[in-house]
Amino acid sequence: MQLWKHPYAFICVHRCEMSDSEDEGRPQLSSRALAALQEFYAEQQQHHSDLRGDDKYNIGIIEENWQLSQFWYSPETALRLAEDAVAAAGEGGSSSTSLRLFMLALVHLSLTDILPEETKDLAPSSSTAQCFLSTLPVALPIFFMVGLVACVSAPSVYQKLRERHRDNVSVCIFEYDRRFAVYGEDFVYYDYKSPVDLPERIATHSFDIVVADPPYLSEECLRKMSETIKLLTREKIMLCTGAVMEEAAEKLLGVKMCKFIPEHTRALGNEFRCFVNYDSGLDRDLSVQLSGQEGPK
Image (cartoon, rainbow, N blue to C red; front, side):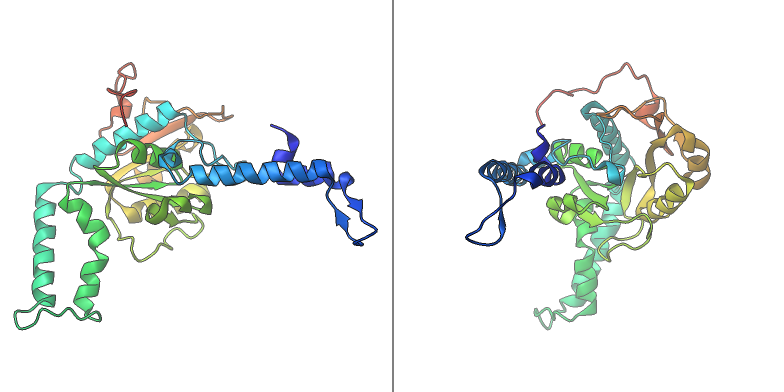
């Protein structure tokens, strides 16, 4: 990559190419510097354009920011974790018949209340109506037998879930990095330092499984993120973090280390592992490859 592809490098390299114009009395970019700047902005515009299509779910389409401790999983690891999350969400998750029938009955009662026989007008200020409408993001996936997955600081898994399971999984991505707001309503701004500061539209204990990857290898970070995880999940947890956090992870979340060893697109200096609190395929024969791994999306 040429140096001027980075804004700060561009400034440093081409500062000396600024020339004073006697006619205008202010500095101007040289033709070479201007051409480099135009090339940089053209590439940035093309990058943002790519994020609008199906390619926006490709791992790496949003580049790692090491200052935010971002290290993306390899495509194979992201797929393995995503497939296990889908399987976990479908086993005793929100798609269970009993819960589905209960939710249908609840909606029926709500509609009966807000639409009495004597009138068909729905008052926008109706508290019952407001309550009913607020439950739709959680209720609709239940009606259609869709699993609910929360990806907390685990964007690679989110991207793989969206790439391959758009119809049978509902996913939210909880991220501090606002670049991920490109994913629209799936995006939830999240700062682990404020672990329970979540928007009202996120109901407590509404996700079948939470996939989390704390950005820092510290007990403080894990402890605070654990508060978020326990607030979001109905039961199941998949935690990806350094092996050195094993004791703290078991104490805080009751998770056990799996046999599966996740990999990243770049080598990390610390041993990285997965931990779960359910019967997971990540703890079985690693020689068994996922079926259809190279199949259609």
